[in-house]
Amino acid sequence: MKILQAKKEKGGSWIFQTEKTELKSPLVLVFGDRYQLEAENIYSEIAELFPGGHIIMGSTSGEILNENVFEKTMVLTAIEFERSTFIIKSKNLADYDGDDELLGKELMEEFPSENLKHVFVVSEGSTVNGSTLISGLEKIKSSKVGLSGGLCGDDARFERTLCSYNSNPKEGEIIAVGLYGDSLEITSANYGGWSVFGPLRTITKSDGNVLYELDGKPALDLYKQYLGDKAKDLPYSALFYPLNVDLHDGSKPLVRTILNIDEEENSMLLAGNVPEGSSVQLMMSTVDDIADGAREAAKLAVELRKNKTELALLVSCVGRKLVMDQRTEDEVEEVIDIVGSQAAVTGFYSYGEMAPFAGEESCKLHNQTMTLTLLSE
Image (cartoon, rainbow, N blue to C red; front, side, top):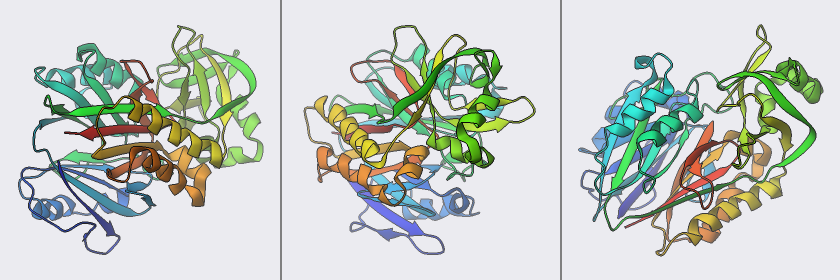
């Protein structure tokens, strides 16, 4: 595996972190601020750097490159796989009339199954129901094939997210990278570091990822009561107080972040499904708890491995970044301490993370977690 990495500041040029060499048909991952990805010639600019490259771009709520976390930049990681191969497929939500599950199913069907080891997803994050998308992907995917990735971000603006494959970034895109080869070792894991507080309530009315009522009362009204003066800053302030959702089906509870609110409907849009009958409780965290959670995620991913990691793809939640503030890099440093300094590290802060729970095969949508995908050939 040969890896090149570079960074670009607003108005600047690409600065390579390692000596630039020619790569053969590389996978090029570009994570950047949405405003920078809206530049008219952004795709042609990167294609000129990597002729024949397979270029995936996604907007972020913060960019990760090795031990650093950046804002309002673009970071690039180009990978030449020497003993394995990859296939990239993409679809757009606009072609599926809101049927995210069908999109996921048909997207997974496009991948040849022989020697498929793992699928890494970079998805738009503004309107997709991540839970339903994953459900569609899992319907077709073999249980032996790994699945991980994340939903693109837009800082804490929640206006629109962009991503693309071999084109200028656009809205509604969902991109999947199928990784093939016997020599590939890929492991993934996630962990949060948040604690529940306050009363336990029951979801009495919801529709997919839209929450209407808790204990028979308007959910948004109740949530605003807890936030107090911070309610005026919704949906931004909600990132500090996600919901712990227990489905009561024997599975582990999931964390859900509020992406938007609807004052007229008195409802809240969450990143993933919140089924009726589930119990919910507010959550909060500290800087140290989040950093410890990132370290735990790295331990879980490394414990599954036989070989040292060559490339670490990190997807962490925008809510974690807001709590960490000036210490955001602490959680990345905790990951590197466990994964090892030999690994090239890249990734982004997201509106949702995709990975199985430790010891499980089925992928879930998470919020407020550090999610890692570790690769080596």
